[in-house]
Image (tube, rainbow, N blue to C red):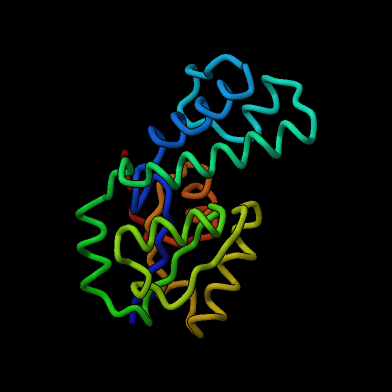
Length: 172
């Protein structure tokens, strides 16, 4: 029996556009210039560009998250992959994501996918081998029964290095 492991950002949903808008909105509110020369703005990108105080970082993240949630209708769903997900039993599916909990919950609610997964597995996806082991423990299955849906090239490469062959690379 196959167990399905879905990534969120860039896989089930395409959030880069809204994420960029949200960060740039927050940066503008702090009197900073937009960042337009990267594919996806992250905290690491912002913090490397701007020397922000702890207070400014908190304000930035709060503004960014609020903007994102207030404009969640701008995310683009991967209709084909969501259609597949909805044909599967939730007991066979987990969401494996590095996204923040409040954003994950909001996206799943927005897309009516709150019951599509038996579990949301939060991870920074730094120790892929350990994550795969935990996923196998959760499902009580060998790695050979896992099927991954992922867009991150680094994660895909690590999964392949572990010998996991059943991987669907999702292209944006």
